[in-house]
Length: 292
Length: 239
Image (cartoon, rainbow over all chains, first blue to last red; front, side):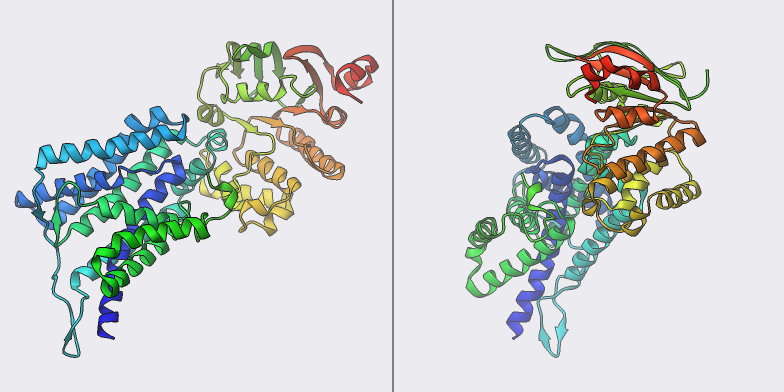
């Protein structure tokens, strides 16, 4: 029973991070029909920027702000300079471009920050709470992670549901031509969408690094898990990304806890294959017809 | 010159080697419905798409009250007061009915004017009011047409470009929508450029008619005169 509780709580914390990462993928897919394979590398890069700031003597929170702002800027710049020119071309072009970006950012990070393991501080205690004299795997830092993800998600929901800007962004994502006819500056909305997505991606990179080690490839596994979560949720649905992320976090935690941690990556791929075989449109897709 | 005069001169648009629009001159006046008629492929939709900036012309000019909009981007043309209601696909089905309408109202309208405009559209089109919270993909063809017209009206346009508003609709609904259009033009004094294959219905509410064939203007006259011209009707209008 105690092990089940531990494994479940660990899974929820991990799942929150995967949910944020999957959400970043979904935001970009929805607006520009690009699966951003560079998302993990972008998050890794901004996490290194935060680490540089923190090691320079600033607090964790200054590092957090630096990472988020850097993520926003990086997303906007990449959309304008790298994605815009391949938009409207064959879909494979965008895939190759984001893969290239992924490799380039990782190499650049190794040059700038070195490729050795460096520890990243956690803002809160990493020792588990004690419940009835028993130590559980749930830490103050896990609560911070979950709260941070929930706050960002609520902020995004509020933006998209209740503001004119959010409505314009959704319109631009669903129908560029109609949006332009209604006076929506579609190009600016797409740039903003990439910026927001990269900001959310940066948050996930930073949260997963907290109390752990960073190196240029530390986000590689998260890309896979986040992608599986996004596909499980339907790629088009932000709510699906969140549910998918939590589901993947829990499932992988059970696999790790009961079957062995060496099976986690294999399990993630097995889930991906199963989803694609059984329900390729994902759990939350509006219509199968919209899938590409 | 009153606000809302749309002057098109020498407009030419090509898709690769194909000339879809060949030196077209049309002037649409405020308070009038100008019907653009012709068979499939005559260049009617291309005309509207070129005016609204979705397609770049090879030559010619589009002036709104003397302001040159020929090379402006589509979103700027929309903001200048030209509302293009595209054929069939203008509804964003993933958004709710009300969100679609609100998008139309965003062109610089204040909150209060938006709410009043929404109320007016719902009054004009009661089926939309019933479904305001539903995703727009539940709407029928006629309701979609109401939605896109209502949305265009919410932007407070000087010029309304309508592409085949009768397409796929029952005659009763066509009559209803065209009747509404006529009322609107008479009361608010907007300029309407109406593209239609359904020439008979279009001429029944139009003031002026222009007939396109293979991208060229082959006839222009008062709507009543066009409707009475048997030779023209048989040759180009199919009724």
